[in-house]
Amino acid sequence: MSLAPAPALRDIVRSLGRVVVAYSGGVDSATLLAVAHQELKEDVLAVTGRSPSLAHGELEAAAALAALIGARHETIVTREFDDPRYRRNERDRCYHCKDELFSRLGALARERGYDAVVDGFNADDGNSPLDVRPGHAAGLRHGVRSPLAEAGMGKDDIRALARELKLAVWDKPATPCLSSRVPYGTAIETDDLRRIDLAERYLRALGFSVVRVRHFGTTARIEVPRERLDELSARQPDIERALRAVGYAQVMIDPRGYRTGSLNAV
Image (tube, rainbow, N blue to C red):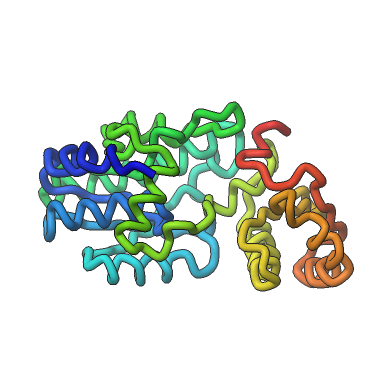
């Protein structure tokens, strides 16, 4: 894999001055943070938003990785759950979530004298018909910069650079917020997110590192990569017992396998 876009990324980062990185701990924001720290040193602050939609363990993992990178890291409590537009869970849900996050990060940047807020949006994001990114519109509204996309870096470029930088998350599966498991039009409830989180943690403990539990009331629809469907089906009785314990009456295995943004087709 060519790392040709990486010099362009470094040039863009250096031009930004002091930056706040919207940092989730995933491969995109972690790679951006690592490069920003190399180029800007103490003029970088990573900030992670904390809310009920964050999966268990993600905040701790993000903090540990930021420490390994050597970057300063803080958390803020975001209050998208106080916004009825977010809780209604219509197709613009992510816009309201990111609007809250970027509003808070912008205020922090201004108060502390940072020049820009940056995020991990990349050149591949939004290119699939199912990969809808209303949150990016919120970023644009708040003047958030996306250096990875500006440098023309797609997911393969980012993973290759992350591996070169020896970031443990270079091959980490995407871990979007728990609310993304709930079909549009179904209100977001914190108890449902807890149930989704427990179900996915159980399935990951079984070895299914790439997994989604799509939440349809008392029905859980499980997605794993197609090549692992037989393995999942063989364990369905045990999985049904475990998921009933967290509140699901019915468990379905999606025969189409894992698909990014599959609920956008529902």
